[in-house]
Amino acid sequence: MDPTTDRPAYPEHPRDPLEPARDVAARLKKRLAAAILGRDEVIELVLVALLADGHVLLEDYPGSGKTTLAKALGDAIDDPVHGLPGFRRIQFTPDLLPSDVTGVTVFEPDTRQFVFRPGPIFAHVVLADEVNRTSPKVQAAMLEAMAEKQVTTDAGTRPLDDLFFVIATQNPLDVAGTYPLPVAQLDRFLFKIRMEHVSRTAELAVLATLRERKAPPVDPRVARDELLAARAAIEACVHVAEPIRECLVDVAAALRSDDRALQGISTRSLVLAVPALQALACLRGRDHVRGEDLETLAPRLFAHRLELQPGVDDPLPLITAALAHGLERLARRTLQR
Image 1 (tube, one colour):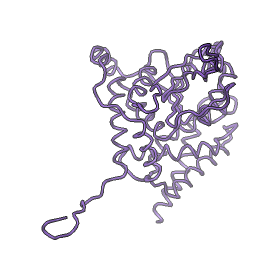
Image 2 (image 1 turned 135 degrees about the vertical axis):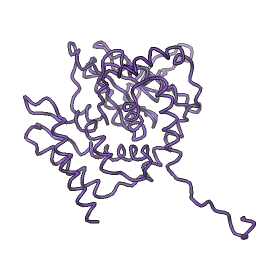
Image 3 (image 1 turned 90 degrees about the vertical axis):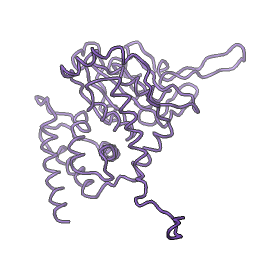
Image 4 (image 1 turned 45 degrees about the vertical axis):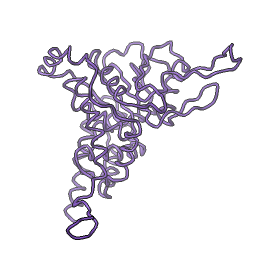
């Protein structure tokens, strides 16, 4: 009670329902930025994908920090209840078997029973290193895990954790002995991110802080349930207006009708784009999606989903043209309201 008025004392400004989600993202960003320098844009996109319940494909060069990034993210997640490891790495090779990823059932002589031993895919953050180096059979197992959050073994179907998050990598130059990812699997990745070499300043900082970055991080970890709550809050509280949805559909239609495209983007990509736009808007301090969010994410959302005509190598001009058309209509709709 307020003693001066005998009325209930309510706060002047009710707590922002997105504040806990932004706090979770800020804590994760701080840990990741301390572990890997000069990758602020990549860190933001990875956090957007994590909060949007998507997966990420990194196209990078060896030694660019992909393992450090994935391990730092996994180590930042605390899950004492379920006991799942925060981070596991799978090195994909041509002789890898699906059971090497999903797990295998073994006979225990002591108990005289068959026991399932989970594979490395049973973790919160899974680094699928050089995912295009393994056979289509293993890629199919990964596709099921990414699409359905479950794996099928000889013991039946087993669910993965709700927080299951894949960071896959492939080398853009070394294509000898690789199996190109099928369109169906590429479509399951929310983003494809190209990691270029960091700036001179960032490389100097990497060399100057070797000792400090080897020390265990002191920042508090983020609980699994906090992350799941952040996802739910973003989905419920970040508004996506009808003109934004129309803009997404217009961009898709423009890409499908472009003569330079052999196959346009799927409806699934638009469905996955909505939570990504919501997550980015939240991280930028807003409770609604704007056209600038779509402008930021469109190249990462759509470039790897386009199949181009022979002789066309770069999908970015197609996306830029389609985006300009969609954003122009969005601006007209906004001015009319």
